[in-house]
Image (spheres, one colour):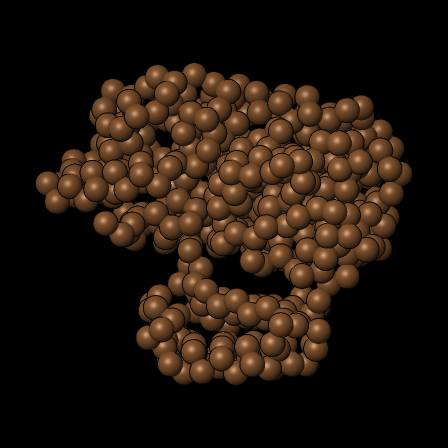
Length: 461
């Protein structure tokens, strides 16, 4: 059976609409309760939310379903996604559930589930859970939202873990931290203050509707301005659930996930701690990582296998190869010696550790990362039709492939979390890159586009 609820990052949609209507949410809770015996660690679940206004009522309905199956529940309140993964892995929990839509706007929300090991729910369990949810909905389900009482000690446990991973202090360092009005709005400033840094927090005042709104990891302009205004040593931007991190140097340069992978890989390699198959140092990334990263790592003797987009797939390949470092250009970076998922705060601590150890800032640490011009265009679509059913799109892709030959990369795919077609082209000629990316995007727009023009275009060069 094809998955109908789970995308590449859990269940996601518009809050209040299927699959995030009250009945389906409660059915997910019931179904999860019924398969708890497939997970080690008992019959207790840790539950957390980000700062969206829909979070509390979604959590209440999901908790109602769990409690109906006599599952014990501890509610962390507002907590980061990696925080829930950590708690699931280290506490007496069979599973951890976080209500979040990550970098999406406030109208969206989602349900992410981790098993006792701290890994995202396995595909076979997702399939089983979905089948049970559909059966429950067909039978009809009584709504019984739970009254939840927050346990603040859970967030503190995660904070103490983060502090324990950093050697020394951050005394004398000036940081600007953009929390995207999201889950880390309290936690991030507190973490860096306890380590001794001087903090200038921005976008740390969530109101339920301003999460990711022109701030955070997708909108860096205000962070760049703040770093310049306050003369900070580094700027950090998180997203709504703080599982990704993007950095801004004191001179305003953006260091994304590719840059973090390079500086971290070099540091771990020099320490003899970068794992890989048959003794070959390896960093796992995705098809979205710039060709410049692959070549910079190759000069260091480091292999870079690519996976499909999604930190779940990066993690699977890391485990298969025995790699300890992997991630995405978007800022999801997995340091497997410390965590089982992308963690923006943990990533920031690792970057700061390298800065302290080398005496260099991230701009200097990534100066050998020569990026190929890259153009990414996102087109909002009505449906995710198979590409082979879209001849106009196929013709545009073929034309681009012939134009670049072996000197470029062309990636056309659908988002796993939104109704978007994503077009990415990379090559040595920036004009040609832009021209073909826009041609393919225009073909999508004419065939299955949801709007009259291109939407959400961004460029990296």
